[in-house]
Amino acid sequence: MTQIYQASCTAPVNIATLKYWGKRDTKLNLPTNSSISVTLSQDDLRTLTTASCSSSFEQDTLYLNGEPHPIDTPRTLACLADLRALRAELESKDDKLPKLSTFKLRIVSENNFPTAAGLASSAAGFAALISAIAKLYELPQNSSELSMIARKGSGSACRSLFGGYVAWEMGELEDGSDSKAVEVAPVDHWPEMQALICVVCDVKKDVSSTSGMQLTVATSDLFQERIKNVVPKRFIEMKKSIIDKDFAKFAELTIKDSNSFHACCLDSYPPIFYMNDTSKKIIKLVNLLNEAAGKIIAAYTFDAGPNAVIYYLKENENKVLGLFNKVFGHLEGWEKAESLKSKFEILEKFPIDQIESNFEFYSQGVTRVILTQVGGGPKSVDTSLLDLETGLPKKN
Ligand SMILES: Nc1ncnc2c1ncn2[C@@H]1O[C@H](COP(=O)(O)OP(=O)(O)OP(=O)(O)O)[C@@H](O)[C@H]1O
Ligand SMILES: C[C@@](O)(CCOP(=O)(O)OP(=O)(O)O)CC(=O)O
Image (cartoon, rainbow, N blue to C red; front, side, top):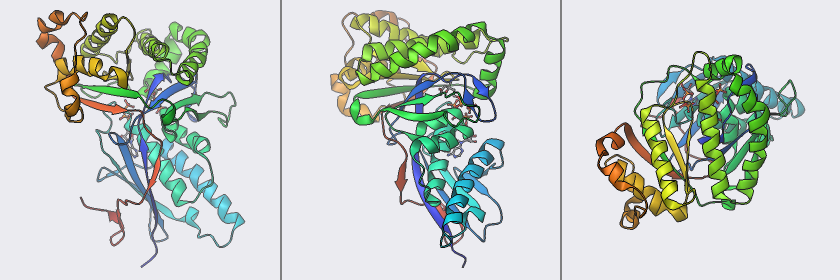
């Protein structure tokens, strides 16, 4: 039987605290502003991808969550072309290397969380795809260099090439060769960062990030102010808050940036609404919590959908989870916090009677919670999703 070469990697989701919104080049996914994100732990949310190639494969194929998935989209093709070109360069310098760049690829991938549900599956998906093929091809490129390929798949995916706290530097060159992800700080620098994700019931969003941001670029005046005057300063301040481990500052900037991004969406013409009434109730809960604490202990952020991500530090876990468990404790996702429940608290100054007297209103609209934390970048793994006998995805 013809040899099948294969390699597997996992990659994480990242949730931006300073949002990427707007492209200056839609083909290369070059952004109008730099952005910052926190990489979330792969213990909770991760993509696992096996990349394989063989002279016997007749076409490039992708299986996602057990089903064939289109691979011939311009963005995926751009990633594959870049990776093959880098492999071909290695082969041209060393005759002994098998000509993997000429073989067709078979890629098998699985997300351990809902795909296309506003949980950044495309970011983890492209980061895992690029990492697995780079491993298969034995490419020497570092994570920043690979991030430029992932960026062509989906802008935010470039940040999933790193763990911890990550910046995507927008760059200024036309060919995008300086628009890449870099590490702001590794997980170990500030491992106390936690994230509570409230998954909000929703029908699929009607404006994708890709088209939404183009509408904003074309029509919003507020957006011009955002990219010229707001984000450049915030980018420097947020990086500093991470280096200084200054949660109050980090949280304030995170909240303001989520608000600024959604304000630009509303200022688009016609307006775009990603947050819904449930999202607004969650904002209110976070505001009341911070007021009761007398300082900012929780920061909300929303991407292009109604799901909330709430960042907080481990030291405030009892207070933050205490409140959210009170409201959403009946939902799936609290198993991880079982041992903490006896320590959950409602702050003395929190107006809990407001919530209790309107409990149905506050507790509706969220389908599940995910408790997670800051985590590491892509990992090379031995687990393979490919059945070498059949050359097809393994059956579960
Ligand atoms: N593991 C994967 N491997 C390759 N492509 C993937 C993978 N997971 C997701 N994708 C691609 O990303 C698409 C989903 O992206 P989409 O932006 O709609 O949703 P999302 O990233 O989950 O949510 P959001 O961008 O709103 O946070 C999938 O349809 C698929 O094309
Ligand atoms: C609101 C965001 O999540 C937008 C993400 O946009 P995408 O990276 O999904 O867009 P494309 O580059 O067109 O694929 C903010 C962010 O992650 O920074």
